[in-house]
Image (tube, rainbow, N blue to C red; front, side, top):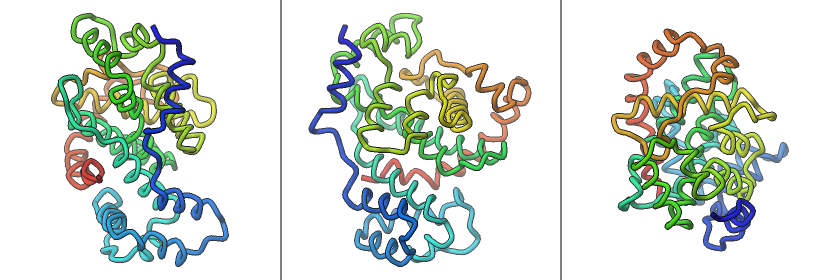
Length: 289
């Protein structure tokens, strides 16, 4: 078995690991600067026609629910706000960087369907429960399993063995990963998020989405992403190998006041049709190359 320290070092030093595109890094820097004007931010994004088109397509989807059509980046900044725009740009950039093709042990479409579904459910759940982190939970839900992409690409033999264990035994996904690697995809994803200099609360959400009780920076965010992940698993039409055997964390349900099984079932039923409508509009993330 590889040591966790060796895996962490490899993840953080692989030269070929995708980096955030320059324009995305510049957008993040501008948004985080309180002196940045909407005009300056709009001019920067407008220099990339492909990014501009994707941002406007997403901003106009029912996912954001604005009654007027958003036809320019400047208007998108005014309506969406800096933070939402930053989340959209980061999401487009990271999904584009991590997207891989299917092979014998990795179902790319199933992976991204699950990621997008988790993001959409997280945002819906945050809104329904009254948490003011809807943009952050969408990004966290979208990226929570990005460690799986790293394992598939850079630890191919180990990833193949993990899939074999999941198919041949009763071990759940976390147990299978630890038996082969000594770490989980959640930890690997957290290391990659650190390498990308993502905000600490998103690093924590990715790292602890299967162990939310370990979170200390933003328990609300991590609990929401964890529950959305499990909702997405249960709503999937087909088995998801990389999340096999995973269930709700009781402390997260208690934290979000979702301990009543009937309440959970009501959310599940109400989300099915709503999620389908949202997914039809948000699948551009899956196609953002």
